[in-house]
Length: 190
Ligand SMILES: Cc1cc2nc3c(=O)[nH]c(=O)nc-3n(C[C@H](O)[C@H](O)[C@H](O)COP(=O)(O)O)c2cc1C
Image (spheres, rainbow, N blue to C red):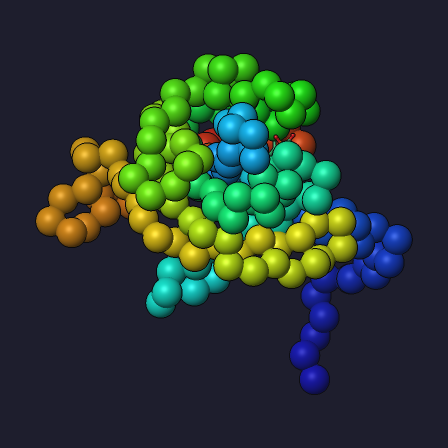
């Protein structure tokens, strides 16, 4: 029988704060377009890869967000991996803006065309990943949106001979909770 060194505290009433012990996770920017053509960008930290072949990614998104509605309407989205100097823009893009206003203009991000999708890639991001809506799983107050990856680009200086260079720096903004982030191992608050 093992010796229990640390006394354990059972916490039943705080399970909704589980995110405080499971973070940090990488934050991505999700770009979508509404059915009437308004571009949208917002940050999401509940993000993961969920298949290699075919490549698929998943994000847990609140049903109240414009991002959720746009993905359901258009069946497409783009994931941008932000650079470390984008924290302020990324955080501002998380504010609630009127659905008829594009966050690209509000937070000063630069859109450019994807070869295959109607929604816009984000110039300032290191990587942009084009996704087609695959399926959805209802999970409490969020829905996990699964996307099939159909294309991707990367800053040229991060890529050579079929290899991603400087892998340790991609992605490099991690969300802890609220206004707390880790960037390159350093604690940041905004
Ligand atoms: C760092 C950060 C991470 C976030 N992660 C998520 C997330 O994983 N899921 C989610 O539903 N909302 C998340 N949010 C909140 C959304 O970004 C926020 O609700 C935003 O207004 C949604 O924008 P939209 O309505 O234009 O889609 C996050 C916000 C920040 C600042």
